[in-house]
Image 1: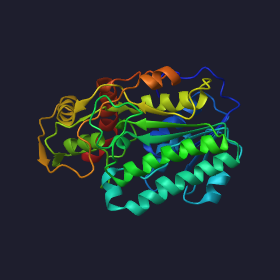
Image 2 (image 1 turned 45 degrees about the horizontal axis):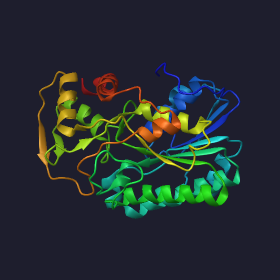
Image 3 (image 1 turned 120 degrees about the vertical axis):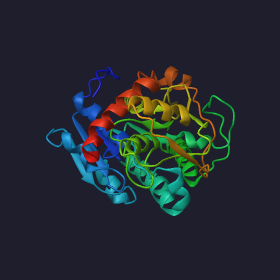
Image 4 (image 1 turned 60 degrees about the vertical axis):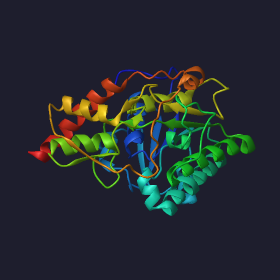
Amino acid sequence: MYETKYHDKDISGISFLVTGGAGFIGSNIVEYLLKYGAKKVRVLDNLATGNILNLQEFKSNPAFEFVEGDICNLGTCQKACEGIDYISHQAALGSVPRSIKEPQNTNAVNVSGFVNMLTAAKDHHIKKFVYASSSSVYGDEKSLPKVEERIGNQLSPYAVSKYTNELYGKVFQNVYGIQVIGLRYFNIFGPRQSPQGEYAAVIPLFVSKIMNRQQVFIDGDGEQTRDFTFVENAVQANVRAMLTANTEASGNIYNIAVGANFSVNTLYGNIQKLLSSDHAATYRETRKGDVRNSLADISKAKTLLGYNPAFDFNKGLAITVEYFKRVLSSLFK
């Protein structure tokens, strides 16, 4: 945990629900809220993609509560919202390739499950509903940097599901009066991100493969760029969005990134240096549904949420690689 504090409000009397809280981003949000003395931090997670080990260190905290359940069940969502003030909704089926392979499952969780959570939040008079959207919403919009009001055609079922979340979020605020804020994440990475499975994220996958001297694949020519964003910046965005006193902040979508982009080749080279490795990568075909370049304009989040990323690409990557060196080293002895 880092020493940077992102809120001024006393949260000792506030109860939070973090859906998908056993996941990578969610568990980092949980850690922050517990560190600063929240009255209650309840996690709702079905452990389909989350890992209960991400929550192990919080079990002895009396303010922590874990509910194993699925957002696809409205009754479960209703129960999870009881006694809650603020919601950070991170639960989703991620991954563009998975969504292409499993469009129905992606829609069931990311759209129907999302509407279930919005409905439960409305019924329980939640003060603020903050949710994770994605930069994939921009689709084939080629101009850089990406600004929230200008999007293209979505290129995958995952992107469609996240854009649908944004539409539902606006409608629920306009029709029912619930305060809703969407955060368009740009390639979040950091500790607790899984290096395992068919849809593992690229940074932990690179680290794991290099350390294990296994074949590493880079999709396309590797010159595609991303606004790689350290997870603590996403934590900051969620905290600021939930607790902001700015009445103009709600009902909006915000880019959450650093505002600088790097190629996958540069990323891989930096990881090689941090691991003191010359392990070479193998190039293969470009993945379907992937955008070529990504770079965020974060001025809107700075202005309305007070968001100010404290971790740039290099700082976040060094922390992340060091984390995975510790976690993975025992596996590869």
